[in-house]
Length: 158
Image: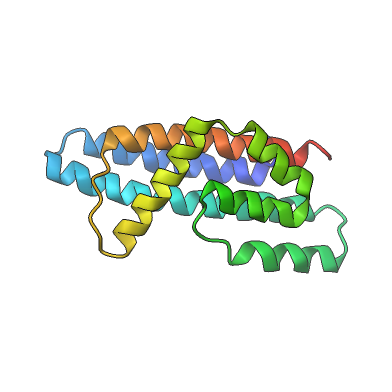
């Protein structure tokens, strides 16, 4: 990982996720469902924050104020990290980034991310979510790969 601030953040996220899985493993199925729902919201939010950290960090080294303002404006309000929304965000910086993201993201990773976000939205809006800890574990692993992919795409030009 090139972005050290992102790497530090992801270590913190990983600790929370591991702790939640540890707690969830000893709970009854209903409580496990609540842990899975919490993790859906948390991991989705972590993807949003991870992208913010990465793109703001990219714009820091010696960039003019206009670059910082553009970056902050485009990433501060970024929510709902569906794969297509991430591609659109990357396209705002470079169409090459968006194209490379679309080319390199695996179909299963995209499906995991989009399923995670759908579940997060269902939970946030009071709708039913049948997500399990098994689902969340797969989604989380795929999200880790996706954020590493984006780090590689963004920082490969530096």
